[in-house]
Image (cartoon, rainbow, N blue to C red; front, side):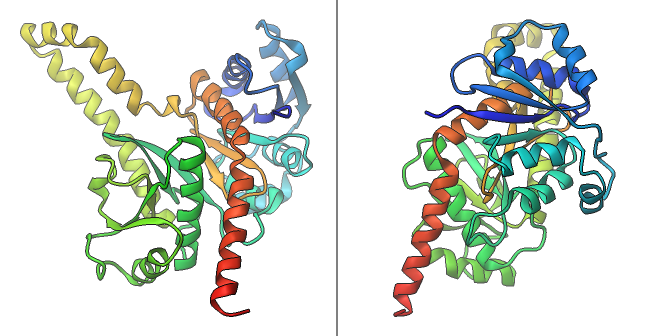
Length: 343
């Protein structure tokens, strides 16, 4: 495998450069990542590096003085802050100096910058944000989870195609089951978007199983769950809060009496494993699929472990050549449509 170089936004996230740098150093363990480029204010990055032990040949620092804030208008900030850590990092991918970019910074700026700077794969109408959800049968890839609030039926078709490539390439799931998130399982349910998308999905080269309701996602009914970002982001944010709420209520009940405390002690390892399955830091970040390079959006509150896993995820993504396989999938579908029209 060629050297895998990952650029990381050292200024993104809630905890500052020290946490990002610590996570990056942890990500150097193993052979997936050959080099990490930390992008941001060099003085802050160097200060964090000076306090750590690491292989200096595998860490590079690229100075970027400006930072795009969470509350800034993404498009305006990208234009006015050309020397921001997000813009500089994305340009490293565009110029081929890095194969991937990871940021826990402004979601809007990362997504808008990914599209305008890194660029879309030819034939992709809209890139999409994908999130891996734990289920009773493994994992489900939810796409779109935040990039396209307003979508067209053909966008959902491409989301399904990209999600299938992702789950097959990274998760090893052969012929992934694809479901369209809807308010009912019946074909005629939904709005104009889902009804038209259903028609496209059922005739595509996909293992499309039909409509799925939100409650079926954690039960592992599908490997790829497709929707527009308005629906997807609501599912994502609710799921995050629900998982935290359940864990909090469970802890309260387990501590409510002596007998329940004893049961909690006996089941401590099982509860630990369950918490780990719902912990976003174990996944690390959400890939922005459909771009000419890999862009991963990490959670704003990411700790060292989350940053480490987001970077590690890049190594697996690149090794599996997900971008190349999405290109092949789109090209293949173009050829099929051309033959169908007798061109």
